[in-house]
Every structure is written in structure tokens, then in C-alpha cells.
Amino acid sequence: GRPSIVLRGKKRGTVSSILVSLGKRPRDAIFQYADGPPDENRYEDYSPMLRDILSRGLREARTKAEAKSS
Image (cartoon, rainbow, N blue to C red):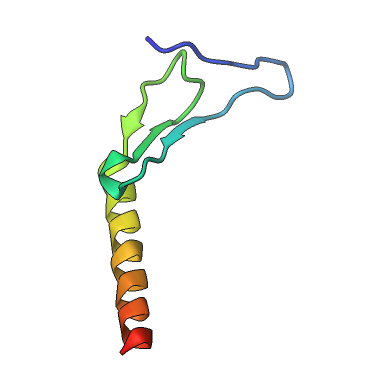
């Protein structure tokens, strides 16, 4: 597995973990979430959701820019 930083203590500690990577294009984005310490919980891949959000935002920005230049 991936190396991780996990904090443990009586009153506090790692409760979840998120891995995010953004690239030049929305399709390069990665978003993974572990519901709990990552050494005890698997990362779930939510990359498609992030890619959709980024693509939608990019389309909206282009549409606004085109409307201003018309």
C-alpha cells in the first residue's frame, strides 16, 4: 500500500484521509477518500465526480468568456 501518516492518541487522532491530485486537464484529476485511518481503511476513488465538477466549471467559464467577447 501507500505510505501514510497516521496520528494516534487517547483524545485525538486521524479520523479520515484525502488524496487529491490536479493536472492540466480535468481528466487528470484524482480524488480518493478513506473514512478512517488509511492504514485501517481503504481509499475509495471519487475521481470521476471531481473530474465532472472540474469539466463543468471549465465549460461554464468558457461559455461566459465567449458571451463577453460577442
